[in-house]
Length: 58
Image (cartoon, rainbow, N blue to C red; front, side):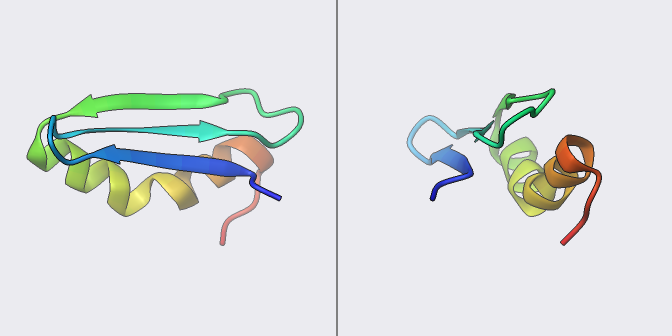
């Protein structure tokens, strides 16, 4: 079962996160643009989003 997608477009240097967990209050985050912003977003989004979405961390 897929619960989330992290989409990174390296050609256009952008990223977004889509959550498919039932009851998620923030199903989409991003997009972010630019090398540094994408790098920072990818580094933390999975754990940060899970904490906001479900209240649990990895």
